[in-house]
Length: 112
Length: 115
Image (cartoon, rainbow over all chains, first blue to last red; front, top):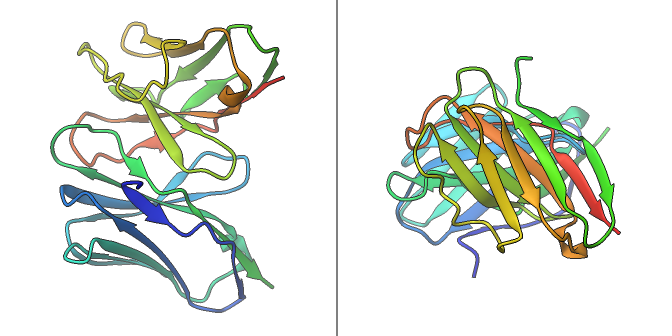
């Protein structure tokens, strides 16, 4: 079983919809949680960063972390065609390996 | 440049040949990472460098893979005797320091195809 599980999609929504992207994980030591967006043939770019549990909002994006359930979410409000990309969750602990552990990514398509 | 720079952007090689992939991190970033991304897959950690410390090589899939970082800056990932399963995007990333949870910034990747 992978340490981080993420539904690969594709997830297709109409423009303006609220999108919910999720990851589950098994390592209870994970403390840092990130969402990266990756456009086709580009490198991943950081969207959201959260430490420990709670919510964080940045414009149309909201990240949620529920450590008790080992579950993280990214919500996109008023989705736009330009949001069409692959979204990767990533996380790390505060001991041991410093490199991030990534989910496999969810491909999102926002239809105009 | 301002970002992580990788070269070549695309490489097609014959099975059994060696390849070298180069990464130039963001200026001032002391931590450097290599990841591999196969088609439709997530990012697989390969190796991590931090300053003059011994690198974390725990993600290298076989002894055909090696990496070095010269002068604490540019890094080269070498794959010897390439196999078809090595076909993937090799992504380099850097971060300002080795603090846990530090934000890492990725390059555009080197797309390797082994034929």
